[in-house]
Amino acid sequence: MQPYELSLSAAADAIRARELSPVELTDSVLERAGQVEPRLRAYATVTAERARRAALEAEREIAASRYRGPLHGIPMGLKDLIDVAGVATSAGSRVRAGHRAESDSTVAARLSAAGAVLVGKTHTHEFAYGLTTPQTGNAWDAGRVAGGSSGGSAVAVAAGSATFALGTDTGGSIRVPAALNGVVGLKPTYGLVPRHGVTPLSWSLDHVGPITRTVEDAATVLTSLAGYDPRDPASLDLPAVDYRPAGGTDLTGLRVGIPRTYYFERVDPGVEAAVRRAVDRLRDLGADLVDVEIPMTRYVQATQWGLMVPEATAYHQETLRTVPGLYQADVRVLLEAGELMPAGDYLRARRARVLMRREWARALQKADVIAAPTVPVTAVQAGQETITWADGTEEGVADAYVRLSAPANIAGVPSLSVPVGQDAAGLPIGMQLLGRPFGEKALLRVGHAYQRTQPPPALAPAA
Amino acid sequence: MSVTEPTPLETARWAARAGLRLPAERHAEVAAAAHRILSVVSVLRDLDFGDLPPAPARPTAQEERDAAV
Image (tube, rainbow over all chains, first blue to last red):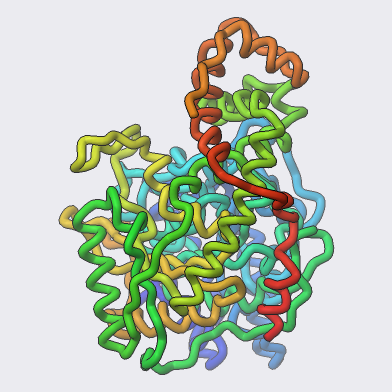
């Protein structure tokens, strides 16, 4: 096994035991990036020299018994919306040509303090306003979509050109590409991870979180990311938590909610079968399966759009007037159309969100976690615009990918996507586990227990 | 509730009112996108909000208390 193939936890164990040096690991990951990047294009920028310097520094610190913890010397990718001092945050857009971040975002600063090594900035759908990331190829089949908007981060982790990565998630942008590339993605509770220094899409729906190969790795990264920062108005001052799950797989007494509505409607049969098989594994581990009703499903898309569209347009107000031609066509028209939304619609969406949060809290009294598909269909061919369902209805690809992930953004609840197998074409399938606000530990416990019943996660076979 | 698609001229006027001058060749495309968005969002008019205020930027005090337990 090459160092780039190691999970974060395995690499951290080897570094701590001084069986592997951060320089060896970083060189291996950079070499891997050199092999796969021409085909997959996960990175907007690879900061190779900076990475080698940081790895050397980590090696010296560890040799001097100044080990900082499990991220020390671990190579990572950061979505190109996340500021790193001295590096461009291009946001996948010509609008940002010549950009250079003046200071670190909170999450970049925290990861740097933990000793993580930046490999580079990963591609995003332009300003995170889309679900495909057209610059990047899927790690399992480069002719298929990476998913988005954190497509570069998920592909880098799946292909071995980053040991872990960060993404952002406004309607599913961590979990969708994680599911489509067979890796783990965690959208934390709203307010848990500060967004200072991260380019917004929609302030009331944006989250930052990890993309990793294992649930245990996601827990390790979350432990470093979470914590109050007053520069993010949504950030909460809460006691520090170690999110890393215990080793056991016993889920006796845990109630896993199975949605009776919404999450299994207009879902590919192969996706549904894989998720239901994974749920059966949870039952085998001792969990009690209980039916849950998903509330207010008729209003999910309306609330999501009612919040996101005007907020995105507001953020881009100036550049939409000065350099509109620099936006990609799909993003420009959404930003322009957002100018036409009345304030009344925006306020209704904000009020609907209150109702939805209440109703979700009620639904989550009946279950400790809810298990559901992350996305209704695996990665489609690049350029495919619609999906036709068995009932004859047609749905836009972006609408389909966001449909099952958006409720967690509106309700603000945590959601963890875990790989649960492949479809008939060999493409990965994701199951999401949804929990109560600040219930990350429960999600990570269940996801980790499930993964321990499965073969160890491997890199995407075609990468 | 059905929403009538704004005409290209209405689209230009509404955008101008928001301070955005749309070139004529963009009126039809933006009108179609705006129509789709406003149609989706119009479903929210069916909800009875009573005296409910809009969601705050931060999670609620109740959520903070729950998290602290």
